[in-house]
Image 1 (cartoon, rainbow, N blue to C red):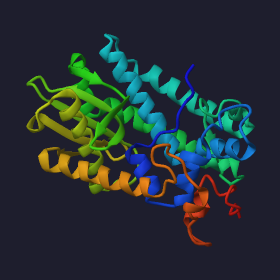
Image 2 (image 1 turned 30 degrees about the vertical axis):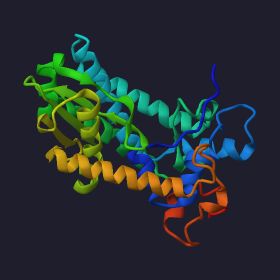
Image 3 (image 1 turned 90 degrees about the horizontal axis):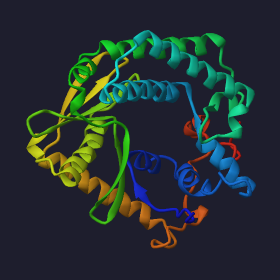
Length: 305
């Protein structure tokens, strides 16, 4: 098997991390690299484990997205939906996530199992909070099946083109990762990009930028005319639907954002071709910054307390 190479591949999540604490960015993409190996240095192994940590809010979104992906894949392959069975299975797996994190069993396979930041750092969480998270997961999965966008997908499953497929493509000088929640053919030579959201609040500006990158993928990689690309984000927590334009202006703005962001990332590298770094070029935020309290890497920065 060829040795894995650490490459700088742009994504929206990478850009968001870069715009926050640079040391957290370094840990995420460089200081944890290779930490999956049994013979990895202790510091890299610890950073790798911390990189995999999630929170109740993040996990809720992951679980609901997984339920949506599973249901749509089943429909696209000719299967039928079983709401009650799906809800029971989703909630049971979610309970197993909590138990595995509480006992530490997840550390045996941190890439495949769920570890909560709350457990790792010994944060006090009342049992009622976990029960509330499970209840919210069930509510959103049921809401998904009642959602008009999902019900439309169920009516025309043959139009499903992609579901959570990680794609890599080139934009200018940058390599880019993107994964569309759902990509549908509209039956008239165009496509509809659907982005599920599960949180309390999402910025329309941020979502529009993300959908602009998806628009690049649809136009550049699939050859869809830009006037045939539609995009929407569906908030399953609140049951809302927002349409977003994805035309030439939005696609060009996304291209410019990628180029600017990648240039900033490259500027901190000690060797651009080799994608190598010096940790000291990625400073921590100032002592006392509120971000440290919620950071997965605060132990490595000696800011756990």
